[in-house]
Amino acid sequence: QREGIRNYVVKKIIMMSSSDEVMREKDNSTLLPRFNLVLVQILKQDWPQNWPTFIGDIVASSKTSESFCENNMKILKLLSEEVFDYSKDSMISAKVKTMKESLHDQFSQIFQLCEFILEASNKPSLLLATLQTLQRFLTWIPLGYIFETNIISGLASKFLPNSIFRTATIECLTEIASLSPSDIPDVYKGSMQK
Image 1 (spheres, rainbow, N blue to C red):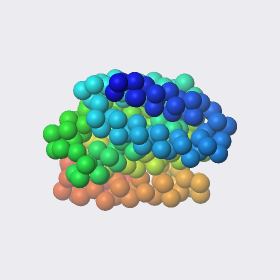
Image 2: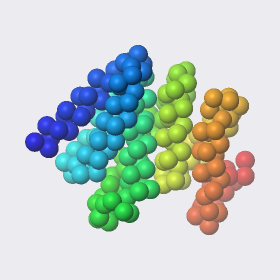
Image 3: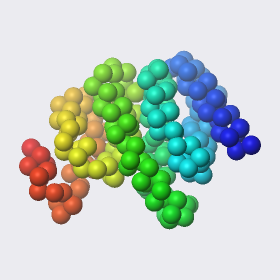
Image 4: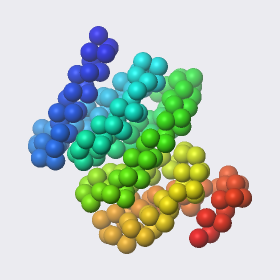
């Protein structure tokens, strides 16, 4: 029964995010965010124990179309918020710990998807959704993803000058700049000063 409900929600999300036109339909533009929230609530119960392939599934489906990808970024953003921002009040600490560990362990797949989108996509709404999702990740991802990649220079050179993305980019850069110097290993401090 639980898996049946999960499959129903996933099918509805797939149907409502199948194209930009379908996503913009009046009913879908209202219902899709609700279904995304329901999916995240299901994930809080099922993932990673009963749905260990979720991250791989969402990353793989993101590669099938930009509209799927855009909605999947919104789902990943909600998941990150639930696990890292709001979990203290709504889940037991052992479950939160398990979910955080799973996100950390599988984050490379998500980060590679974000990098690919930021480098290859020309769709403003997808780029904006990705920047907003990345901003939520920056509060908890391993520092190597920030300082050992081109993410900072990409944000500063490609997205900061563009007014459409400026606010989301500033939010990302603010998250990076607000890292406590004592939390940053010496090897990365030179990157912060650039």
